[in-house]
Image 1 (cartoon, rainbow, N blue to C red):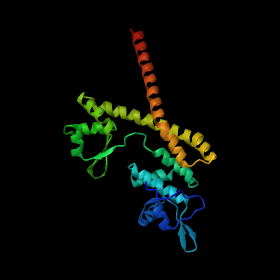
Image 2 (cartoon, rainbow, N blue to C red; image 1 turned 45 degrees about the vertical axis):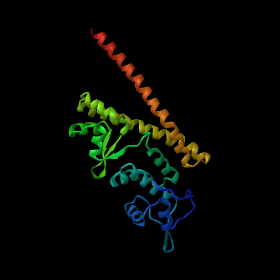
Image 3 (cartoon, rainbow, N blue to C red; image 1 turned 30 degrees about the vertical axis):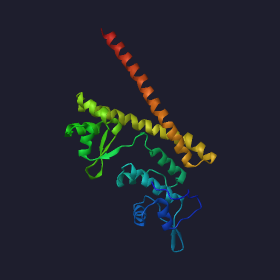
Image 4 (spheres, helix red, strand yellow; image 1 turned 30 degrees about the horizontal axis):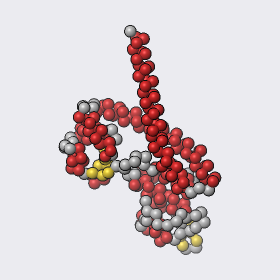
Length: 245
């Protein structure tokens, strides 16, 4: 996301040229996103149109969503869920929560490059299993987004004959519980963390820094919770089997 200037305060109004310079976006794109309802119309002052901090925040959110591979339809759906009364700070919170949690972002590879990384040609079934495991996903132009740090793990599972149906079942579990965790963590930030920083006058960047520091702790806490729950499940399973004998 391009940032070419200092934050726009609540009373600053920008011309269209100043807005495009501020967000690094063409006039054509600004007008297109306005026509799609992703940003509000310009503020009229006589025959001239001006843009506020709200326009900047919403356009930056659109750029953030695009960088995560959201389609236009998905961006429209996401933005539609943000109240029209949301402040630029509220929108900045949405951008903060979109920041990737993986230390190493995925890279885009052609099929040939992916095969080279794998050390062998991957057939359609193997590729489908890697997609199901969340290690590979389709990108534009026939390329793939690949979590390189996890690729060797996925290849190892393929070599061990990991059943595709198990990958699908595991993916469903991750998706269901991951969404629940994400929604609850977002609620925590929205109701408890952001109001405290907003009241103190801290900028949205402060919350982003808090989130960056919290990420490794959150991941470690999830792993610990999983290990404790798995140990409990194993003990309960052993107890049931012992009781059945």
